[in-house]
Length: 112
Image (cartoon, rainbow, N blue to C red; front, side):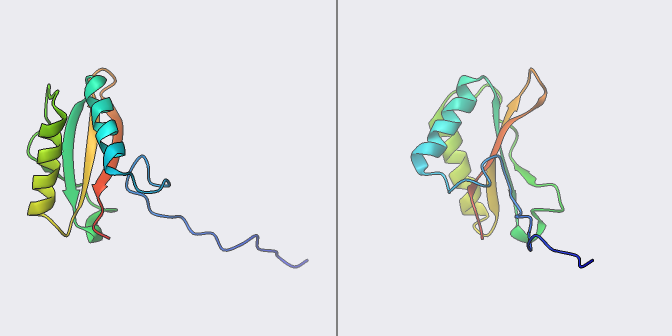
């Protein structure tokens, strides 16, 4: 009996919640930030060099933004992180203090 292969499947590395979707537009990113804020979740920004994104913890940009309710403040911090580390991935996390977990996590700036 000859062994049949169904195909050569490769697992795609993904960095976040929306990893298999097309890139988010600026308006879609803003909508996600507004969703994080409206849920009362804590926004946090992390960054990592692409060579370390899959096997290392990401570095947090400042502290999480506890109680942040202004979209523009979150956007300004994401942009500042990207300017400081232009060759890094930058992602936004929404921490849910009730479930003590990440409600959402997605890459805003992809260095690839």
